[in-house]
Image (tube, rainbow, N blue to C red):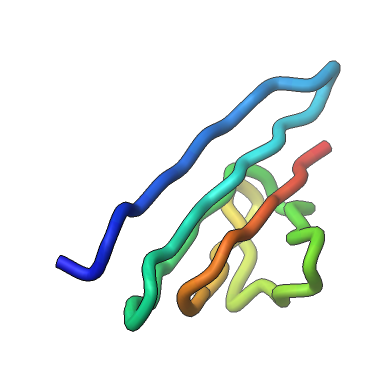
Length: 67
């Protein structure tokens, strides 16, 4: 147990916003629906298919956008 893992999503028009918190000393694989997902802080996708974009993230707070 390293701390709280949090995720929260919200629909915005025809898009989606996903906010994720990864606790200290932890890594996470974050799968975001859609091939064109981006992370507002510049985290680059590890992989992308037609249905899911996958990110490998260390501890921190992340905000993803899908249109």
